[in-house]
Length: 244
Length: 304
Image (cartoon, rainbow over all chains, first blue to last red; front, side, top):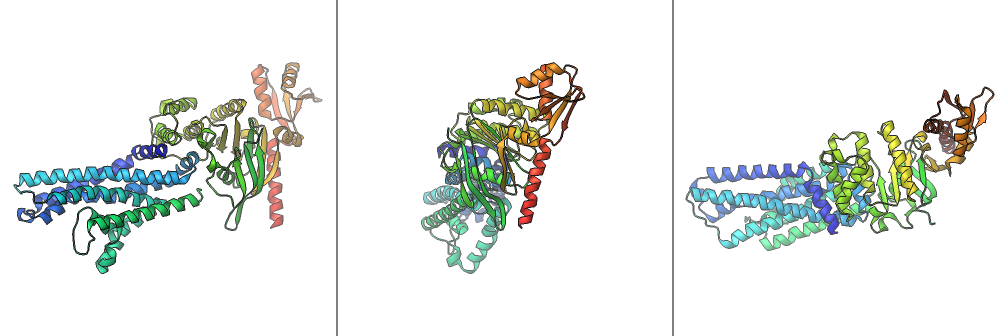
């Protein structure tokens, strides 16, 4: 299992796809953090709630973690490397299990970069503009730790989705359509149900507050349940299906 | 010794299509077996069942007395090359191998050894995108050799190799089997493997058509190779030393039954004997192969 995990980590590190994902995320974090921090009037940034939004931009890591997770599984099917992978490790649950854990690790790295960058820029901008930091320690912990937890679990959700669908394009589309369209529609019309979706649970875990969102701890449990369910489904389906 | 591979009434259906039907065979240790048949005969499907990638509809495929997925440390027992395209184009050849060797719990240094073995050391750090088809075949072979397996399973390994590459592969496989290890190599071209294999399995439309030692198959051919040389006695002696039985034709040429033209040419060349004429008389191995697979095809059509 450790051997398989090392193998999966090297798979992630040894192509430029991962680097591309990381750089795209960094570009978006820079864009949003700088725009929000510099263009918002000082009067719009002196309250805790607004500062939390500014400092929560790193939450964008979750979607990149999910994409990384999807790619960890589906690029093997896309390029056919799944065949040698399974010939070397025919007990497929080991492969899928290692991919789930490796995707969580990738999520943690992405979260570290996104959250670190967001805070660096945010705090620097507040200091430069003479705005005092109003966010209390509990919120800081929630945004940072919650952001890590959400990204790790979203990494597993992406890998689980990939292990269910196997097809790269279908998995990426399914992920984006769910996160950006379906779940928002659901939350918009039936928030009492929509808040249990992985997207809104992820938001709640990483310190966002808003009408209808679950409390962070409960949302963490819900997100974990999503990751476990998708991971398990991916495990079972991958173990049962033939590899062409 | 126990057989290395056993197929017991292997059958694989995809919906209404039967890709492999009631296929049984076994492979003895230390042998090279050619797995032959036209494209679409069910060779690849059979190999995937042996390797646990596809589940048989009925029947069993055993490797070292177990289903593949039940083997402990499978990479140390079985090496396989399935498709020459199974690489991430953006990954270096060396990283491709490191990924697999780590999964198998092997030492990283083994990667550099196998890269040297297949003569890819110079291209180790290049991305596979820039590899020729022949280099990809060799990289696939390097991956199969990582765990120093006792059994090699190769699906159409000669595809994309130039003649020099084919000869390199042939010599490699012979040396490999000479160490008591077993090779199972598929091909849709008999000539590619005729000089390498000890026995052949021929399948067509998913069914076994022939299972026999190569010598038996060539005997079945009935044809002979006609060879003319100014040093007839020397060549006859050389051929006898190889267990062949040359006879003299009316016009003074030698007729050698039960072998391939290529082999005679190679032997004469190795002995430094000039050859002025070299031709196959009667049916060639290739013709017999085509005939066997065509018969089965007709029979299958008659059944339908």
